[in-house]
Length: 116
Image (cartoon, rainbow, N blue to C red; front, top):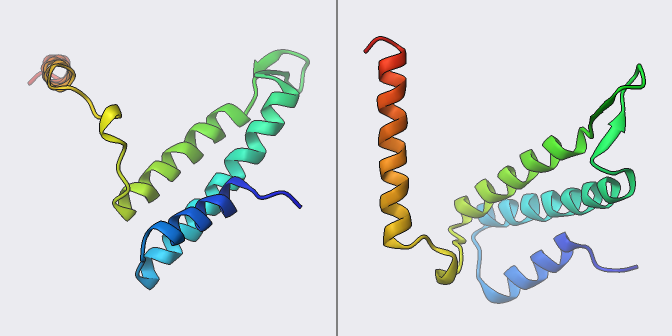
């Protein structure tokens, strides 16, 4: 039987780090989420991004939003564990400044739209 993404994750993480018992539960949850992502990606690759709906219409495969939710769940679990991105993938000062400006502009737009 081949190793899954989840079992490889558990093996790698428990070899590299010492976790508290409550953190171990998060490792197991992350592993399960990784396995589910792996299964959904395989099913999506087989079925494709567009499927037929109940009346024959084309519709987005429901695996697409399910995968997005699972990926967010995985990121939240990893954040709880304190596992951060590699430094090379961290945003630059320019990217952080642009993001802050965009966030401010969005808040201003919402304030104007809501009558503030």
